[in-house]
Image 1 (cartoon, each protein chain N blue to C red):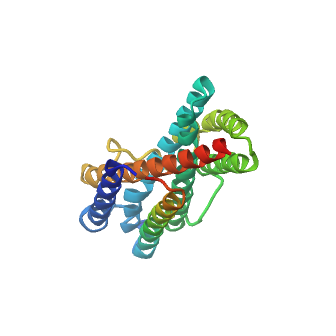
Image 2 (image 1 turned 120 degrees about the vertical axis):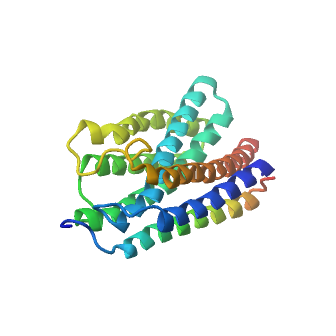
Image 3 (image 1 turned 90 degrees about the vertical axis):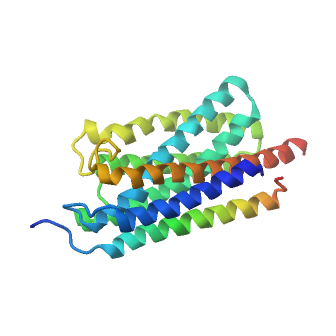
Length: 216
Length: 40
């Protein structure tokens, strides 16, 4: 592992600890949701970075289909695994927020449903990769499936504007109170740095695996 | 004020706790896998 990757991961961890402290202890209590709204400081950064991860998978998929260079396949694998971890976490955080605010852990609202489709479709691609022994076929089939699965990503982000949704519209630095912007922005970059560490490490693991497979 | 959610720190704690455990567990998993695969 490169030294910069470890430093980026540690920087992300440190920022996440400070950002979470700020969100929990310093940021003001939201007027209607009370302290429960503090979940936003970890939920929204996780959501943004999940969508970013799967978009990086899409870039890797297009890269593989155009160039057949293995580095793109490593990117597909590492971003899908990381995106599934953050995407599953996102759904759990959302359910924990939903219970006290909506009264239910889960509802088939457009945002929640599209997130479930997103997680399940990329989980299916990961399963597909585990079933195919030939590395070239595996990369091509999973890249094609990734392009198809990515079509849902803009819908996940925008469906709260397009459709009647129980889920609130996107929380961004432009839509929240100015006092909430700092911890939200800090944790967004913190999770981004942690995700970069995850993807970089996963990329190197995938590279070693592919090297071994292709040498056999 | 009516409609305001009172309390809820148990939900906040659960969300942050699960997030911390997930990130740390995945980091440890990746570091162990990297060592097993001989990543330098």
